Image 1 (tube, each protein chain N blue to C red):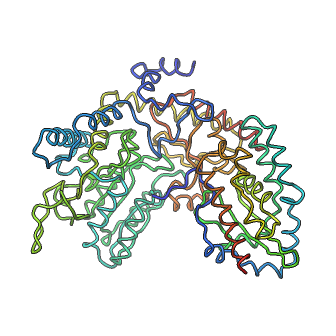
Image 2: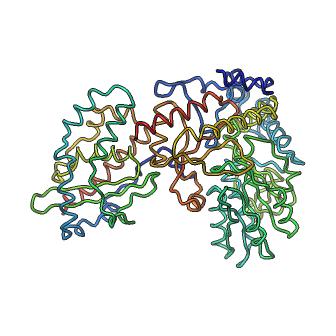
Image 3: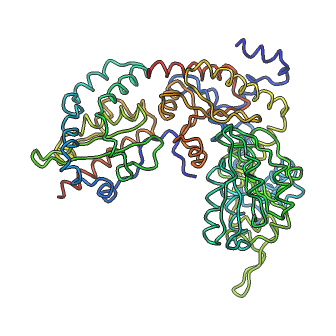
Length: 182
Length: 417
């Protein structure tokens, strides 16, 4: 039987499904959505250094999760009208949505993620701090595994969850790869 | 540990939980720096030393293939393997070991029955399940229905989490061919009154299948008293190894059913002109069976039977009562499934907290529960929730652990406030 106990993100990602579930062009003419993407503080105001510095002084699970959950509070409000089937990440225990916007002017890829689970929101925020607002090429060159190692996330997060993180990143990389390929 | 001494004064003297816990090596490990509190028994139960040792002993001293070799090891392995079948027969009170078939688990057992009954099903025929079934007792029937034109209809559930008997009465009719129903709900813990339903179904000539996966860890089934045609369960929830389960079927029906898989062991004679099937139960056991697992399951049943089952049931009831009593200490906590008769399973929601967050943060405190849809999406839909958190207890859990669960839930609530 399929079981998703303790599992947040799906290990399901391919350039094909990314192309299908995230129609990038669709949001470029939506001014409000564009603003939302550009205003996302994660990766802009909240930097990787902030997160690494913050993590350095946390020594027990309560502090660590409180910090992760706090980061999740920085996720911009996800547009209600984008909580739709094509943006939904399937097979997950918590509901996860992911949309992207490629800014032609700056050549950068912007991402928004939403979930109804607080810890998932926090982990998504960490991913966005690392990957949001980069050019597809820079995004693809970012070693997220190394970041997770630095944050010691893999040790404190169950392997299934770690796999979920990797799968989430894989999905974003697929979107970036599709964009880079033009 | 005042809780336990109180328990002992109320008639549990026959059952020493701390002593029983010594039988389960895994229970003494730590998780995330805390002593493991294992409350995910509904997903899979832990194994006593007796099971581990039986399997180890088999591999060390007698492993070989069964029913084949003209040698001592083969004889010993076959004796142990068939001995386990007899143990299962006794456990479920089946009339004959010919009616006890090894499967990979409950899921495969239901698939064998559903596929076996497919040739009897016609367009317009109806298969009754319930809204509280595990997907394993829905999907195989849907697949067969798709092939045959039959329809799968759910018996409704009441808001308390009991079977709606009026709904059953309405749905059971002359088109009903199969009633496939769970004895105990994996999500709600409800113990369904299956015997009278089976009787009504049988009176109409309906073939009956009982999913006992969640029942057998808590009480002995008696297939003859139940009067079902098929009874299925898994070993791993019954403190036995994974990879093996049981299909009990009435001999006459099993004789009529076609084999599920072809291969070695299941045949009597093979030729390119005509192949004939082996006798029961081997007709349904193609290939080399899970020998060590069968022996392990036998050892698990022997272990359970060596204890006072009434005392175990009483201990489990006490765990559930304690949990129920503590619900009000967690603001916004709501138990899903308030049936009058329940096994010690508690599905719950807490206002403002996602089950996935609850599960993760309990794990940080060494407490294992299950979160999600529990392979029962139609039931989740009925309650209008995407999932629940579920604590499921076994006799080796302590009242202290129940207290730890609720302390941990309150801690999570403070953390996420």
